[in-house]
Image (cartoon, rainbow, N blue to C red; front, side, top):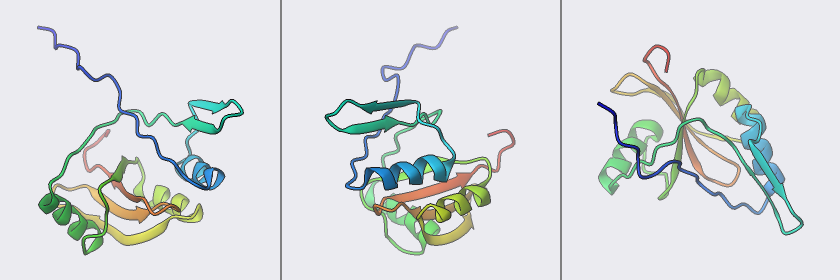
Length: 137
């Protein structure tokens, strides 16, 4: 039995910044990702990073409070927070700190067994890095 195709084929999040070079360096160098596409047509600059898989999580305020409390000790994130799964949490955290991240809270072990760390990018976007406890993910 085949599974029907999803009505949404890809999730893209567009981030606008006043300091393009700083944020490009932060995400490209900090995460070790090469741009998948670059646009510079004289009307502005942009690039796209291929982050492999994407999911949209929608939280109510209570769940956002629960996650913020677990990862940061208090309610700190705004209406949008990135959560990026990485293969090596410590290495990713150190690279991002080197490229201007702010550590919001030290890594924690979640009740479901993942290791999460809360950080903030140079523009103030809340980021959760997480390393899955499952083998091969």
